[in-house]
Image (tube, rainbow, N blue to C red; front, top):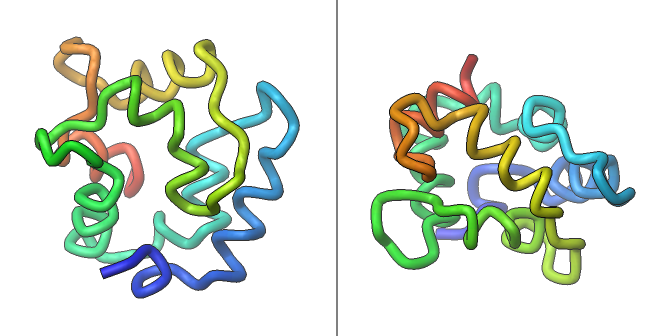
Length: 109
């Protein structure tokens, strides 16, 4: 399974282009532009599993740094500040990482 089996390549490209400038990443806007926020909970979980590179059941800061590159190879990395903000926006139990339920809540809210 690939991201383009759930999201359109054009929507992904537009979402990544929107946050090309340093410190411009906004997860809510990104999820809207790429179309993820309008997908079913199962599709959101499928995307989560693709983003969880080490299959730990969590997306850690080290994986989030390369979040945009998972959508478009060659995209910029997220800054430390963007990564920390991303984690804190979803990390309901303050364990420093995003679980599948937390990711789903963040994307669909």
